[in-house]
Length: 402
Image (tube, rainbow, N blue to C red; front, top):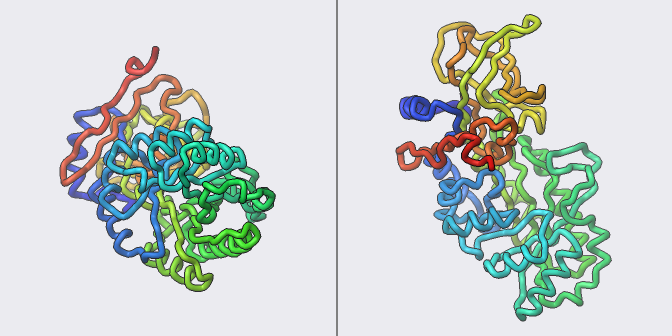
Protein backbone atom coordinates (compact mmCIF):
# COMPACT_ATOMS: atom_id res chain seq x y z
CA UNK A 1 0.00 0.00 0.00
CA UNK A 2 2.96 2.35 0.45
CA UNK A 3 3.73 2.56 -3.26
CA UNK A 4 1.71 4.30 -5.96
CA UNK A 5 -0.24 2.00 -8.24
CA UNK A 6 1.39 1.83 -11.67
CA UNK A 7 -1.91 2.40 -13.47
CA UNK A 8 -2.34 5.71 -11.62
CA UNK A 9 1.03 7.18 -12.56
CA UNK A 10 0.03 8.43 -16.00
CA UNK A 11 -2.88 10.43 -14.58
CA UNK A 12 -0.69 11.75 -11.78
CA UNK A 13 1.97 12.85 -14.28
CA UNK A 14 -0.69 15.05 -15.91
CA UNK A 15 -1.71 16.42 -12.49
CA UNK A 16 1.94 17.32 -11.80
CA UNK A 17 2.17 19.16 -15.12
CA UNK A 18 -1.12 21.02 -14.57
CA UNK A 19 -0.49 22.08 -10.96
CA UNK A 20 3.32 22.53 -10.98
CA UNK A 21 3.19 22.88 -7.18
CA UNK A 22 2.98 20.55 -4.17
CA UNK A 23 -0.22 18.57 -3.67
CA UNK A 24 -1.85 15.78 -1.70
CA UNK A 25 -3.37 12.87 -3.57
CA UNK A 26 -6.08 10.63 -2.09
CA UNK A 27 -7.07 7.34 -3.70
CA UNK A 28 -10.72 7.52 -2.65
CA UNK A 29 -11.57 4.43 -4.72
CA UNK A 30 -9.05 2.38 -2.73
CA UNK A 31 -10.22 3.93 0.53
CA UNK A 32 -13.85 3.02 -0.21
CA UNK A 33 -12.93 -0.59 -0.88
CA UNK A 34 -10.98 -0.72 2.38
CA UNK A 35 -13.72 0.65 4.65
CA UNK A 36 -16.41 -1.44 2.98
CA UNK A 37 -14.27 -4.49 3.65
CA UNK A 38 -13.93 -3.44 7.31
CA UNK A 39 -17.71 -3.00 7.54
CA UNK A 40 -18.29 -6.53 6.22
CA UNK A 41 -15.73 -8.09 8.56
CA UNK A 42 -16.86 -6.53 11.82
CA UNK A 43 -19.18 -8.37 14.20
CA UNK A 44 -22.44 -6.76 15.33
CA UNK A 45 -20.91 -6.26 18.78
CA UNK A 46 -18.28 -3.93 17.27
CA UNK A 47 -19.23 -0.37 16.36
CA UNK A 48 -16.82 1.64 14.18
CA UNK A 49 -16.58 5.45 14.26
CA UNK A 50 -14.36 7.11 11.65
CA UNK A 51 -12.05 9.64 13.35
CA UNK A 52 -12.72 12.78 11.30
CA UNK A 53 -9.56 14.42 12.65
CA UNK A 54 -7.41 12.02 10.62
CA UNK A 55 -8.71 13.42 7.31
CA UNK A 56 -11.85 15.58 7.11
CA UNK A 57 -11.85 16.01 3.31
CA UNK A 58 -15.35 16.05 1.84
CA UNK A 59 -14.70 13.13 -0.51
CA UNK A 60 -13.58 11.01 2.46
CA UNK A 61 -16.60 11.86 4.64
CA UNK A 62 -18.93 11.34 1.69
CA UNK A 63 -17.48 7.84 1.19
CA UNK A 64 -18.11 7.09 4.88
CA UNK A 65 -21.81 7.93 4.49
CA UNK A 66 -22.35 4.78 2.40
CA UNK A 67 -21.04 2.44 5.12
CA UNK A 68 -22.05 1.35 8.63
CA UNK A 69 -19.42 3.66 10.14
CA UNK A 70 -20.39 6.53 12.38
CA UNK A 71 -18.21 9.65 12.51
CA UNK A 72 -16.20 10.83 15.52
CA UNK A 73 -15.92 14.64 15.55
CA UNK A 74 -13.97 16.91 17.90
CA UNK A 75 -14.93 20.46 16.90
CA UNK A 76 -17.73 22.57 15.48
CA UNK A 77 -15.85 22.60 12.16
CA UNK A 78 -15.75 18.81 12.00
CA UNK A 79 -19.43 18.71 13.03
CA UNK A 80 -20.29 21.03 10.14
CA UNK A 81 -18.18 18.95 7.74
CA UNK A 82 -19.89 15.71 8.78
CA UNK A 83 -23.42 17.13 8.60
CA UNK A 84 -22.67 18.83 5.28
CA UNK A 85 -21.52 15.56 3.74
CA UNK A 86 -24.54 13.43 4.51
CA UNK A 87 -23.81 12.21 8.05
CA UNK A 88 -26.87 12.80 10.29
CA UNK A 89 -26.49 13.60 13.97
CA UNK A 90 -27.66 10.08 14.80
CA UNK A 91 -24.37 8.78 13.35
CA UNK A 92 -22.08 11.26 15.12
CA UNK A 93 -19.98 10.77 18.25
CA UNK A 94 -18.61 13.96 19.85
CA UNK A 95 -15.18 13.64 21.48
CA UNK A 96 -12.47 16.19 22.31
CA UNK A 97 -11.44 17.87 25.59
CA UNK A 98 -12.71 21.36 24.74
CA UNK A 99 -16.51 21.65 24.88
CA UNK A 100 -18.00 24.99 25.93
CA UNK A 101 -21.61 25.32 26.97
CA UNK A 102 -22.39 26.96 23.62
CA UNK A 103 -20.76 24.07 21.75
CA UNK A 104 -22.76 21.56 23.79
CA UNK A 105 -25.92 23.44 22.81
CA UNK A 106 -24.89 23.12 19.16
CA UNK A 107 -24.37 19.37 19.57
CA UNK A 108 -27.84 18.98 21.08
CA UNK A 109 -29.39 21.16 18.37
CA UNK A 110 -27.68 18.94 15.77
CA UNK A 111 -29.17 15.79 17.36
CA UNK A 112 -25.73 14.30 17.99
CA UNK A 113 -26.22 10.74 19.19
CA UNK A 114 -23.41 10.41 21.72
CA UNK A 115 -21.44 13.06 23.62
CA UNK A 116 -18.24 12.13 25.42
CA UNK A 117 -17.99 14.14 28.64
CA UNK A 118 -14.45 15.06 29.65
CA UNK A 119 -14.98 17.18 32.77
CA UNK A 120 -17.37 17.91 35.62
CA UNK A 121 -18.13 21.27 34.02
CA UNK A 122 -19.25 19.53 30.83
CA UNK A 123 -21.46 17.21 32.86
CA UNK A 124 -23.09 20.16 34.66
CA UNK A 125 -23.51 22.27 31.52
CA UNK A 126 -25.01 19.46 29.48
CA UNK A 127 -27.41 18.57 32.26
CA UNK A 128 -28.60 22.19 32.45
CA UNK A 129 -29.15 22.34 28.68
CA UNK A 130 -31.12 19.11 28.35
CA UNK A 131 -33.10 19.68 31.56
CA UNK A 132 -34.42 22.95 30.12
CA UNK A 133 -35.42 21.04 26.96
CA UNK A 134 -36.78 18.12 29.01
CA UNK A 135 -34.84 15.56 26.98
CA UNK A 136 -32.32 12.84 27.79
CA UNK A 137 -28.87 12.58 26.24
CA UNK A 138 -26.65 9.53 25.80
CA UNK A 139 -23.09 10.10 27.01
CA UNK A 140 -19.82 8.35 27.71
CA UNK A 141 -17.47 9.45 30.49
CA UNK A 142 -13.89 9.85 29.32
CA UNK A 143 -11.40 8.32 31.72
CA UNK A 144 -7.67 9.04 31.90
CA UNK A 145 -5.79 6.07 33.35
CA UNK A 146 -2.38 5.89 34.99
CA UNK A 147 -0.14 3.61 32.92
CA UNK A 148 3.51 3.82 33.89
CA UNK A 149 4.45 2.61 30.42
CA UNK A 150 5.95 5.59 28.60
CA UNK A 151 4.72 8.47 26.48
CA UNK A 152 2.32 8.48 23.54
CA UNK A 153 1.07 11.08 21.07
CA UNK A 154 -2.17 10.81 23.08
CA UNK A 155 -0.44 11.04 26.43
CA UNK A 156 0.33 7.50 27.50
CA UNK A 157 1.45 7.90 31.10
CA UNK A 158 1.51 11.72 30.89
CA UNK A 159 -1.12 13.96 32.49
CA UNK A 160 -3.29 15.34 29.66
CA UNK A 161 -6.56 17.31 29.25
CA UNK A 162 -8.38 14.15 28.14
CA UNK A 163 -11.12 13.21 30.61
CA UNK A 164 -10.71 12.65 34.35
CA UNK A 165 -9.02 9.99 36.43
CA UNK A 166 -11.35 7.28 37.80
CA UNK A 167 -11.39 8.66 41.35
CA UNK A 168 -12.59 12.07 40.12
CA UNK A 169 -15.58 10.41 38.41
CA UNK A 170 -16.22 8.40 41.60
CA UNK A 171 -16.78 11.58 43.65
CA UNK A 172 -19.88 12.68 41.71
CA UNK A 173 -23.46 12.08 42.86
CA UNK A 174 -25.07 10.97 39.59
CA UNK A 175 -28.60 11.05 41.04
CA UNK A 176 -28.43 14.83 40.47
CA UNK A 177 -28.16 14.27 36.71
CA UNK A 178 -31.33 12.37 35.90
CA UNK A 179 -31.44 13.46 32.23
CA UNK A 180 -27.92 12.17 31.57
CA UNK A 181 -27.92 8.59 30.25
CA UNK A 182 -24.43 7.21 30.89
CA UNK A 183 -23.85 4.27 28.54
CA UNK A 184 -20.28 3.61 29.60
CA UNK A 185 -16.74 4.92 29.23
CA UNK A 186 -14.22 6.20 26.71
CA UNK A 187 -10.50 5.50 27.26
CA UNK A 188 -7.87 6.27 24.61
CA UNK A 189 -4.23 7.06 25.45
CA UNK A 190 -2.14 5.09 22.94
CA UNK A 191 -1.82 5.61 19.19
CA UNK A 192 -0.38 3.97 16.05
CA UNK A 193 0.06 0.49 17.53
CA UNK A 194 1.24 -2.22 15.11
CA UNK A 195 1.54 -5.14 17.53
CA UNK A 196 -1.71 -7.02 18.20
CA UNK A 197 -0.44 -8.37 21.52
CA UNK A 198 0.33 -4.84 22.67
CA UNK A 199 -3.14 -3.76 21.58
CA UNK A 200 -4.68 -6.64 23.53
CA UNK A 201 -2.76 -5.81 26.71
CA UNK A 202 -3.87 -2.17 26.52
CA UNK A 203 -7.49 -3.07 25.88
CA UNK A 204 -7.50 -5.65 28.70
CA UNK A 205 -6.27 -3.06 31.20
CA UNK A 206 -8.97 -0.63 30.07
CA UNK A 207 -11.76 -3.21 30.31
CA UNK A 208 -10.71 -4.44 33.77
CA UNK A 209 -10.53 -0.91 35.16
CA UNK A 210 -13.79 0.21 33.55
CA UNK A 211 -15.61 -2.85 34.87
CA UNK A 212 -14.50 -1.84 38.37
CA UNK A 213 -15.46 1.79 37.81
CA UNK A 214 -18.92 0.92 36.48
CA UNK A 215 -19.62 -1.13 39.62
CA UNK A 216 -18.49 1.71 41.87
CA UNK A 217 -20.66 4.21 39.97
CA UNK A 218 -23.55 1.73 39.81
CA UNK A 219 -23.65 2.15 36.03
CA UNK A 220 -24.78 -0.60 33.68
CA UNK A 221 -21.89 -0.40 31.22
CA UNK A 222 -23.44 -1.18 27.84
CA UNK A 223 -20.63 0.51 25.86
CA UNK A 224 -16.88 0.69 26.22
CA UNK A 225 -15.10 2.91 23.68
CA UNK A 226 -11.47 1.84 23.25
CA UNK A 227 -10.68 4.70 20.87
CA UNK A 228 -8.43 4.25 17.85
CA UNK A 229 -4.79 3.31 18.04
CA UNK A 230 -4.62 0.69 15.27
CA UNK A 231 -1.45 1.68 13.45
CA UNK A 232 -0.10 1.64 9.92
CA UNK A 233 3.55 0.96 8.99
CA UNK A 234 5.74 3.96 8.19
CA UNK A 235 8.79 1.73 7.85
CA UNK A 236 8.97 -0.92 5.10
CA UNK A 237 10.14 -3.46 7.68
CA UNK A 238 6.88 -3.14 9.61
CA UNK A 239 3.69 -5.03 8.76
CA UNK A 240 0.03 -4.04 8.61
CA UNK A 241 -2.41 -5.24 11.22
CA UNK A 242 -5.09 -7.40 9.59
CA UNK A 243 -8.56 -6.15 10.50
CA UNK A 244 -9.78 -9.74 10.65
CA UNK A 245 -7.42 -10.18 13.61
CA UNK A 246 -8.73 -6.99 15.24
CA UNK A 247 -12.29 -8.23 14.90
CA UNK A 248 -11.33 -11.62 16.36
CA UNK A 249 -9.66 -9.88 19.31
CA UNK A 250 -12.74 -7.75 19.96
CA UNK A 251 -14.97 -10.85 19.97
CA UNK A 252 -12.56 -12.64 22.29
CA UNK A 253 -12.63 -9.76 24.79
CA UNK A 254 -16.38 -9.30 24.46
CA UNK A 255 -17.05 -12.93 25.32
CA UNK A 256 -14.41 -13.17 28.03
CA UNK A 257 -15.65 -10.08 29.89
CA UNK A 258 -19.37 -10.45 28.96
CA UNK A 259 -19.46 -7.01 27.30
CA UNK A 260 -22.46 -5.70 25.39
CA UNK A 261 -20.76 -3.49 22.83
CA UNK A 262 -17.22 -2.38 22.02
CA UNK A 263 -16.56 0.79 20.04
CA UNK A 264 -13.44 1.70 18.07
CA UNK A 265 -12.52 5.01 16.42
CA UNK A 266 -10.11 4.16 13.57
CA UNK A 267 -8.81 7.08 11.54
CA UNK A 268 -5.19 6.57 10.51
CA UNK A 269 -5.91 2.86 9.83
CA UNK A 270 -8.73 3.84 7.44
CA UNK A 271 -7.22 6.67 5.43
CA UNK A 272 -3.44 6.62 5.94
CA UNK A 273 -2.45 4.14 3.21
CA UNK A 274 -4.59 5.89 0.59
CA UNK A 275 -2.87 9.26 0.64
CA UNK A 276 0.36 10.53 -0.96
CA UNK A 277 2.12 13.89 -0.89
CA UNK A 278 3.94 15.18 -3.99
CA UNK A 279 6.60 17.88 -3.83
CA UNK A 280 9.42 19.04 -6.08
CA UNK A 281 13.17 19.20 -5.52
CA UNK A 282 14.23 22.86 -5.65
CA UNK A 283 17.93 22.44 -4.89
CA UNK A 284 20.67 19.86 -4.41
CA UNK A 285 23.94 20.43 -2.60
CA UNK A 286 26.61 18.80 -0.45
CA UNK A 287 27.17 20.02 3.11
CA UNK A 288 29.95 18.47 5.20
CA UNK A 289 29.93 15.41 2.90
CA UNK A 290 26.16 14.92 3.25
CA UNK A 291 23.94 15.01 0.16
CA UNK A 292 21.13 17.51 0.73
CA UNK A 293 17.87 17.89 -1.18
CA UNK A 294 15.82 21.04 -0.55
CA UNK A 295 12.13 20.64 -1.34
CA UNK A 296 9.33 22.99 -2.27
CA UNK A 297 7.30 21.69 0.67
CA UNK A 298 8.29 20.34 4.05
CA UNK A 299 6.81 20.41 7.54
CA UNK A 300 4.65 23.34 6.47
CA UNK A 301 2.68 20.65 4.60
CA UNK A 302 3.62 17.51 6.57
CA UNK A 303 4.31 18.25 10.24
CA UNK A 304 4.68 14.67 11.50
CA UNK A 305 8.52 14.52 11.22
CA UNK A 306 8.81 17.59 13.47
CA UNK A 307 6.06 16.51 15.87
CA UNK A 308 7.05 12.87 16.37
CA UNK A 309 10.59 12.60 15.04
CA UNK A 310 9.40 9.95 12.59
CA UNK A 311 9.42 10.18 8.81
CA UNK A 312 7.01 9.17 6.07
CA UNK A 313 8.12 6.67 3.40
CA UNK A 314 9.45 8.48 0.32
CA UNK A 315 10.41 7.57 -3.26
CA UNK A 316 11.20 9.31 -6.53
CA UNK A 317 8.25 9.69 -8.89
CA UNK A 318 10.65 9.40 -11.85
CA UNK A 319 11.99 5.89 -12.39
CA UNK A 320 15.74 5.57 -12.45
CA UNK A 321 18.25 2.76 -13.04
CA UNK A 322 20.90 4.54 -10.99
CA UNK A 323 22.05 3.12 -7.66
CA UNK A 324 20.53 4.63 -4.52
CA UNK A 325 22.51 6.78 -2.12
CA UNK A 326 21.68 8.56 1.11
CA UNK A 327 19.99 11.96 0.95
CA UNK A 328 18.96 14.33 3.74
CA UNK A 329 15.63 15.92 2.81
CA UNK A 330 14.73 19.41 4.02
CA UNK A 331 11.77 21.69 3.39
CA UNK A 332 11.73 25.42 2.60
CA UNK A 333 11.25 26.87 6.08
CA UNK A 334 13.85 28.98 7.87
CA UNK A 335 14.24 26.52 10.73
CA UNK A 336 16.35 23.41 11.24
CA UNK A 337 13.15 21.69 12.38
CA UNK A 338 12.10 21.48 8.73
CA UNK A 339 13.74 18.12 8.10
CA UNK A 340 11.69 15.41 6.40
CA UNK A 341 14.16 12.60 7.06
CA UNK A 342 17.07 10.62 5.61
CA UNK A 343 16.32 8.42 2.59
CA UNK A 344 17.90 6.14 0.02
CA UNK A 345 17.06 7.68 -3.38
CA UNK A 346 18.46 7.36 -6.94
CA UNK A 347 21.89 8.96 -7.24
CA UNK A 348 20.84 11.01 -10.28
CA UNK A 349 17.95 12.78 -8.56
CA UNK A 350 18.16 16.54 -9.08
CA UNK A 351 16.39 19.89 -9.26
CA UNK A 352 12.98 19.58 -10.89
CA UNK A 353 12.39 15.94 -9.89
CA UNK A 354 9.30 15.08 -7.90
CA UNK A 355 9.27 13.07 -4.68
CA UNK A 356 6.29 11.13 -3.36
CA UNK A 357 5.69 10.63 0.36
CA UNK A 358 3.26 7.81 1.19
CA UNK A 359 1.02 6.88 4.15
CA UNK A 360 -0.14 10.52 4.33
CA UNK A 361 -3.88 9.97 3.92
CA UNK A 362 -4.14 10.61 7.66
CA UNK A 363 -2.65 13.48 9.66
CA UNK A 364 -1.31 15.20 6.58
CA UNK A 365 -2.36 18.68 5.51
CA UNK A 366 -4.79 19.44 8.37
CA UNK A 367 -2.07 18.61 10.93
CA UNK A 368 0.49 20.85 9.24
CA UNK A 369 1.67 24.46 9.75
CA UNK A 370 0.92 25.78 6.24
CA UNK A 371 1.04 29.55 6.82
CA UNK A 372 4.60 29.90 8.14
CA UNK A 373 6.76 31.88 5.67
CA UNK A 374 3.81 32.38 3.31
CA UNK A 375 4.59 29.53 0.93
CA UNK A 376 1.92 28.05 -1.34
CA UNK A 377 -0.80 25.95 0.26
CA UNK A 378 -0.85 22.50 -1.39
CA UNK A 379 -3.67 21.36 -3.62
CA UNK A 380 -5.73 18.27 -2.79
CA UNK A 381 -6.38 15.82 -5.63
CA UNK A 382 -8.58 12.71 -5.53
CA UNK A 383 -9.14 9.60 -7.60
CA UNK A 384 -12.86 8.82 -7.50
CA UNK A 385 -14.68 6.38 -9.80
CA UNK A 386 -11.50 6.12 -11.85
CA UNK A 387 -11.24 9.88 -12.52
CA UNK A 388 -8.73 12.41 -11.16
CA UNK A 389 -10.11 15.74 -9.94
CA UNK A 390 -8.89 18.67 -7.86
CA UNK A 391 -10.69 19.14 -4.54
CA UNK A 392 -8.78 22.31 -3.74
CA UNK A 393 -6.39 24.13 -6.04
CA UNK A 394 -2.99 25.49 -5.06
CA UNK A 395 -3.34 28.72 -3.07
CA UNK A 396 -0.74 31.47 -2.78
CA UNK A 397 -0.36 33.72 0.26
CA UNK A 398 -2.30 36.46 -1.54
CA UNK A 399 -5.38 34.24 -1.26
CA UNK A 400 -5.40 34.37 2.54
CA UNK A 401 -3.17 37.21 3.78
CA UNK A 402 -5.04 40.35 4.87
